[in-house]
Image (cartoon, rainbow, N blue to C red; front, top):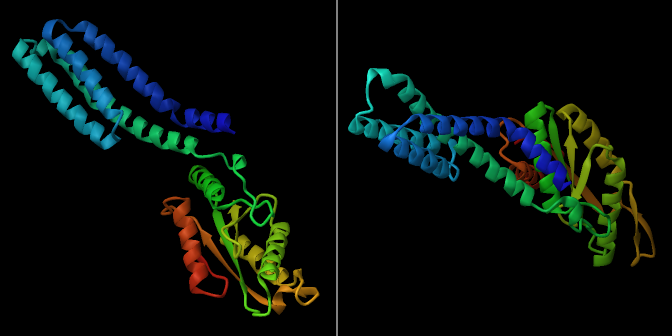
Length: 288
């Protein structure tokens, strides 16, 4: 899994790596063409600009490049290397000093974000069990949801998020029976989901599912029958001594949230779904 994610990072950024390498090589050639104070100044400016830009973003990199270009021009003027015959070389050096920090800044910013992603625990390495059902917990579920968001940005495919809440209202159910009722719903929901869906549990009361490549129409077609069917699930009521149906002691609430171009990250999409779940007892959809 880690190798696959590392390969994905390299595939995404290899063009930026290539451009940065080309600019660094070009800088070396230009340094070799200079002489005296100008050679030393250009070498120092390139190294300092690259080092600073690596720790900032592309915008700050542009500012660094502008400062570097201004300093280079000042050095050339004071050292007597300024003239019409030097203009092509000066233009090349200024261009490199402007573009190199920008490219490295963008590369560094994205590389830091990618390393942060790689540093996150692999979902399979965590203990995902919730109530012994084997459902993902919140942390690995958010990681998977973030992966699906990135895939949506690349492919444009729709992405949905489903939440189902089990509200037990029967006061006669003891704690063990309530837990059994919620486990029964979770199992039922999991069996009704499609192979591409990713079920998870936020708590004992809330079960969710990531719905890749699913538009609102398909998601609604899935959620409605799923809720209807889950209410017929049964569990063992040890206090009463017989099995009971969910509709006899609990209410199920469901909601859908859909990612769009303004969705910032997995946490934002999940919070939008939780708000929808908390503000209505009826299934509803919202775009994050």
